[in-house]
Length: 459
Image (tube, rainbow, N blue to C red; front, side, top):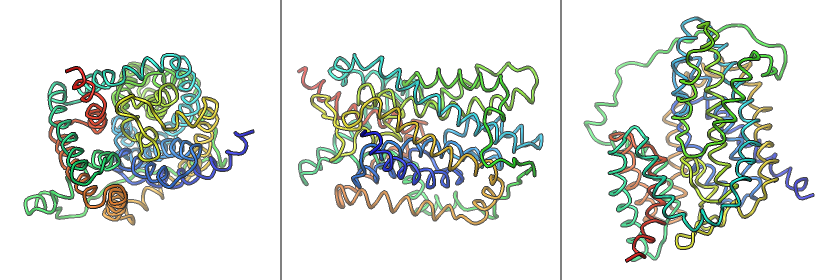
């Protein structure tokens, strides 16, 4: 009965997310962490019911990973971070003059993967949930081990492990300053600083003469777009007919496997899956279109699996996704919290049942599919052209900067803004110089909150 009562709320917020993030996916370079994290955080802090928050997030992820394929395939520009592994196949198919085929294969694979990954992930979480108490008690050491592991397997390798130490010291110092002089224990501002680190770094760089000279361009960038007039008369093209049987089977298998793991980087998992099927089918054209479907499907399944498994099973952010774009679902004080002393949580894990995660997760996927999928199929070319010609990237940057400042002021006033700028600057430098992505930085934040107190308690 409660499922029926909560359904209108879930549908409404899933629809809002589908519209917003379906549009944002068209804007190239809009990183998931820098867009999904602050907007989801705002939804949490507005007091939206838990099922609405969850459906909003699922629809946001699915929608963005459907439309991010449009600039990637039509223009050769990655729509976001997760679209980068798709570029090789997309560019080959553009040279063959069939970018529309690349797009149709990619988003059809995404829909199938999303529908599969939600029940698979919730099922895996159910198998792991009996171990929740043991995981909670060992959380400080799990975070430390996971952080070192993820940092080492990032592009930074050993340097990534070493620079965690000064970053943890920075977090501890800023939190101590806030507690001693303002009585403030900030969390959200740290999330915003990490999520928007590259953006903050770029904004500060262009404020210097040297940075402006480096960023200045003498002419407008030109992009050539190859477009086919082929289109489907059906409003909702059947993805099972757009993909052949072998592509459906490979996408299904890759989605089931990738949504069952939650400790690997989503980008790394997408690359690994692409490499696993690199040698087949033997026909080059069929191989390229198959990899487009499977790899874009993996972008959906890894994001959903890495969110759902730790959220449903433990309530602790134990995956790169859960400490990145999905972070507000786990920890968004004062509404959602992770107790740094006991490891106890108050978040969607405590407010929703496994059945609710399954049902409203599928609601989010279906709403995104109904709203975004047919529009992406039919209007990809004019949408991509409109965004490149008419939408100001500076306006998008300004909008997200204003949103970040608003939330920072809400949580900590001027000090909250200073924390965002400081953490963003350092995090952006780590990302740019060491290739230490935001997922590692989020994990380091939890090491500062959970592991450092546990280590000090041993002495």
